[in-house]
Length: 173
Image (cartoon, rainbow, N blue to C red; front, side, top):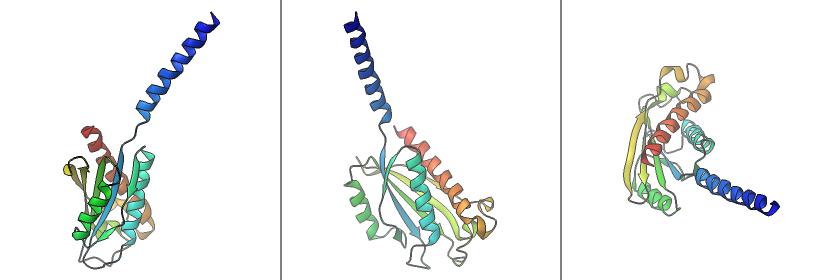
């Protein structure tokens, strides 16, 4: 009888391990931040904060996430190089996120609502290099009413972006 109990325990342990391994599988993706802003060739602080918040959001959601260096000036020839580099990294998806800055109000670095027009994102499947999904997010005035709230506004806005992308990734799987 004790051998039978041990066998059942071992079998139960093997089944639980198999179920855990199946549930623990995470999607892997690479984030490419693109700053669409002709007023400066330097990476803006909002872009850096948004990139960190998006990376943190995906990591906390259980995704395996990496990133490429930020591109400035929109989708240029360097964008193709970044896609190729990301595709070599054995990931499932490449996520280009383009921040479209308001060219007329480029001096409003301290106000997300006034300096960012929109953020466009795409999900590119590495298997085919086709765009599997895409969308846009627009900051609203409640995201930061003063410069003191800029980091909270960026975190909230980036959370919305992560949620939209994550919902699309779930639909793809």
